[in-house]
Length: 87
Image 1 (cartoon, rainbow, N blue to C red):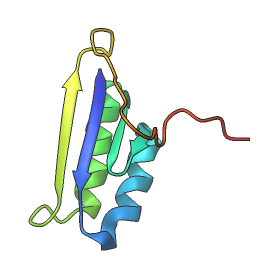
Image 2: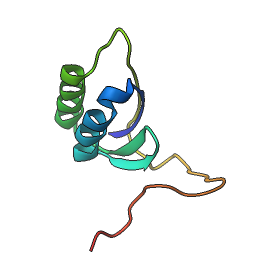
Image 3: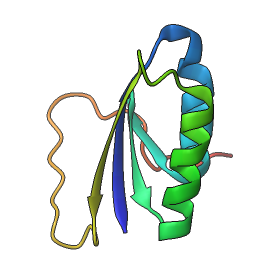
Image 4: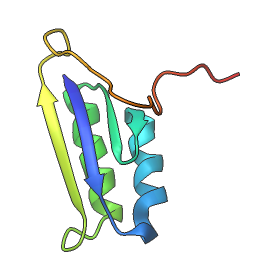
C-alpha cells in the first residue's frame, strides 16, 4: 500500500515523530512523509506514533492508497526532502 502521512504535533514531540516516521517512509517536506508499506509496517508505524503522541493535542492524517500507480505528483515551488542520495 502507498501511504502519505501528514502530521501536526506539539513541538516537544516533532523530533520523535519524525524519527519514527522516517524509519518507514520518505520525508517529503515539513510534516509530510510518503512511501510504500506493507500492512504490517503500517500497523507498526501507527503503534509507534501512538506511543509518543498525545492524541488529545496531536493530529495525524494517513492517506492510504492501494498503489501510487494512479497518482501524480505536481510540485510548485521549492522541492524539499525526497529521495536524495546520502553519501
